[in-house]
Structures are given as structure tokens and as C-alpha cells.
Length: 101
Image (cartoon, rainbow, N blue to C red; front, side, top):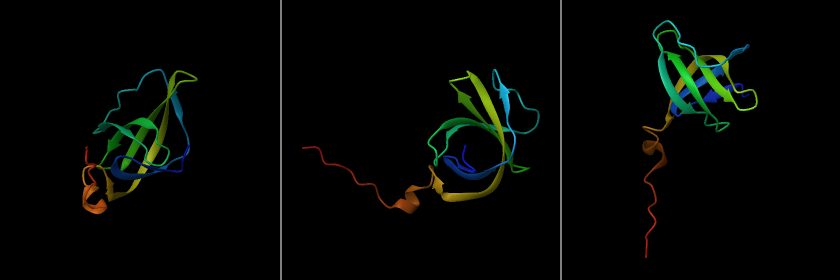
């Protein structure tokens, strides 16, 4: 597990120590936004429960070996607009289109 996680929306998280196992993703109390995303560093899919007011989150990764969800607490340290899939075209320039002949 990486120490730093960058999701597809440009959020950069620091992994906090500790984890828990769940049979299914629990319903968290509070103001959480649920996002199905991917980690840009390790290229793994996970479910992110993000509380933007508190800058905390919980990431849920599915383990095929144990057939359980592994929950890791996360702290959002910053937002990087150049890593956001909705705005990264502003930083990468124009896409190169292949000509079909």
C-alpha cells in the first residue's frame, strides 16, 4: 500500500496508520461524498468516501484473496488541478489525433 494516493479528481491523500476489514462497504454517518476512482500511482481501483469539510476520507479497496474490503483512513493534504481528469487537458496541451487512412 502506498503512503500517498492521488485519485483521478486531483486529490492527494496521505495514508493514516490502521485499517479495517468489511464484508461490504459500510454506510458512514456524516457528510461524505462517495466516488469510485483509481489511484494514479498504483493504478488500483477503490471506493472513496470523502468529507470535504474535514479534509478526511476513507478508502475501500477490494481484496480478491480474502473477498473483503480493506478500509484505510486518509487525510487530504492538497488538490492538484493538473492531476484532475476533468482539467488535465489544460496542462497537457492538445491531444494528438491519429489520421486513419
